[in-house]
Length: 214
Image (cartoon, rainbow, N blue to C red; front, top):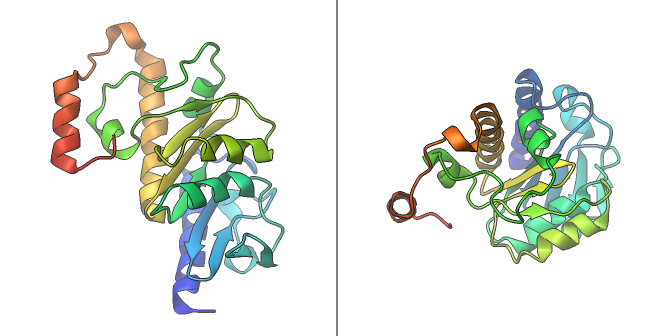
């Protein structure tokens, strides 16, 4: 095992503990992955993110075939779709965090941006948020729907399921997931009618200043 793989194993375990401690990963819900030089590390199926074992993480080869460790999460197709369709993806985080999941359970969500733009940090860390139709958890159709987006978005909201966030590093994907959860919490707490939304000029200033893919 390379030193880099050992480091990423420990980082994935620490990420799981972090989400569990914050109450963003309940029971065995949620799954994480990172890219390796020779494949991928993925959290096992039916594993609590708060009690991951670095030695038992599922290792997949470059073609996403299991190499070692426990059986991988049933959501491998979801993760794979981000890695193969969005250049620069180094990690994927899928949580059932309370407020983002609650948003996914709402009826009549628009197909894009179910949260109005009021937070500059949401623009910087999440970006536009497409809402994908409901598919059975673990279905390859989730991955197909993500691929159909053509790599344009770093985050998606799965109807009746929850959020998925990709990043250029594990920390980047984690930050995106937490920002989406917090923004959903504020939105559901305050309601759209009382929010001061960012206007087009303010959003454009963020995009230009920080070189955002918006």
